[in-house]
Length: 132
Image (tube, rainbow, N blue to C red; front, side, top):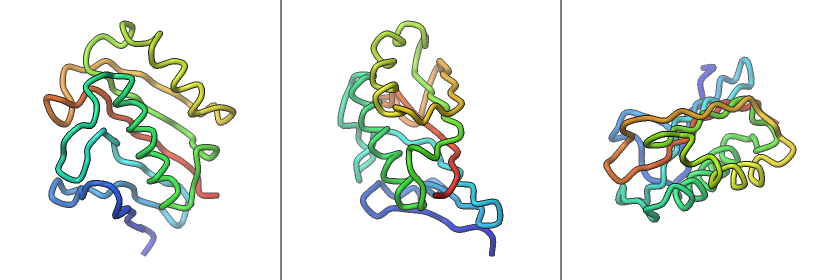
């Protein structure tokens, strides 16, 4: 099979929602990472700010990347969804992203949206990466 499902046990279980945290295409050595949110094992957020949630989401993204056999340095594309007008949050999120992505410099898209996975979810990040 050319598809490997990635579901790190330390993150909430996405199977009831019909998803894996990531899927590795073993033929192309590409990792497709589902939208990561700030949820604990009970699907509750740990922060009620965009900055707090983004930090937790990026930590979750790192967990998924490592479980997939990849890393931040191997990110190819990152899409950030933020509830509301994206421009209102750029000043706050830019330093967090710059520190996290450091020299990786993947293709990056930011999108303001009306809703996300739950009414308390403010940030969601999905990504594509290459294997190490």
